[in-house]
Length: 228
Ligand code: MN
Image (cartoon, rainbow, N blue to C red; front, side, top):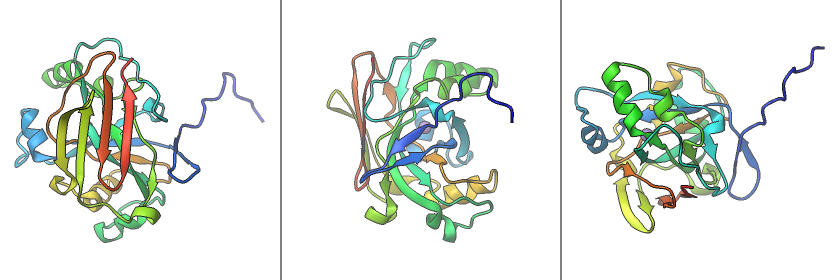
C-alpha cells in the first residue's frame, strides 16, 4: 500500500444548523440566473440561458471567518446567492424528482474579481481566476430541508456595513431550483457533498477591506464575513 508523498488535503465541510458537518465534494455555480442581473452585466436574458461554472471546494469560507481581500484585483464584487446542498446523487434527474436530492439550503457569497472577469470575457478566456480564487465562497450554515421544507420563494438580500446593496426574490430565478438540478445532472453526475450556488439578483457591486458583508435569505439563514 503506497502512502501519500505530500500531506493529504483536509476534507472541506460546512456546519449544519442543529449539529453535524456537511462534507463538501464539489462547488457548482449558476451564472445569470436572474434577468435583472443578467442585464446589469450587459447580457440579454431572453437570448442567453443560464449556465454553470465551478469553484474549488477549498475556496469556501465558513463559520463567519474573515475573508482576505484577494490579490490581483481592484474590483472585488459581492454576489449573494441561495446555495443548495445535495444529499443524494444522480444523473439525468427529472425536475419532478429534483427536490428529493436536496439535503438543505444555505446562503453564500459568490465573490468575483470583476475586473479579471471582464478581461476574460473580452479575451474569450475562462472565468476560473475571476471566480475560483482562494476564499471566493463565504457560506453560512446549512439548514436541513427536513427542518424548513423546500425553498421556492422569499427575499434574498445583501447588506454591506448595514446598508442594503442587493434585494431580490428567489421566485425571480430564470431556472428555479428543480430546473437547476435537472440541467446540471444532465452535464455531470451529482453526488452527496455537492453544493450549487444558484445565481445572484441585481445590485452587485464592489467591496473594500474592512467591509462587513451580511447576506440573508428568508426562511433559510444568513452568511456573514468581514473583508480583511
Ligand atoms: Mn454568481
